[in-house]
Image (cartoon, helix red, strand yellow):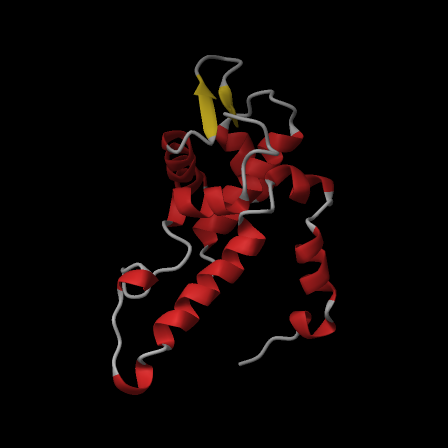
Length: 152
C-alpha cells in the first residue's frame, strides 16, 4: 500500500494538535514543528476542516485544534478526508468492478484487502497513536519480525 506524503503530513499535524490539549496552534507552528511545507499543510488543514476533523479559530490566539476528541478520530477518517477511499481500483469501488475468466476472483482479493485495511485503520485513533496504546490487532501484526521486512 502506498501512503502519500499528504496522509503522513495530516496525521503528524493532527497528532501534534492532539498533544497540545485543545489549545489552538497556528499552521506555521505546526509546519515548522513537523517540518512540513507550509502551503501544503495549509491546504491539508483546509481539507481536514471541511471533513470536520479540525476546527480553526481566528485572531492572535487563533489557530487549529481538533474538532472532536482524539479518541473519536481514526486513522481511516484522516485518510478518507485527505486522500479519498481506502481502496479504489482505477478510481472505482472494488465491489463495482467485474472481472471475467482467470481474473474472476480478483474482486474478492480487493474486497479482502479493503477489509484488512479497515481492521487496522478504523480501530486505531489519534489518541491510540499519541499515547502508544495501540489496538491489540495492530500490536500483534507489528510484533511479527516478518512485518518489518521489505519485499520488492
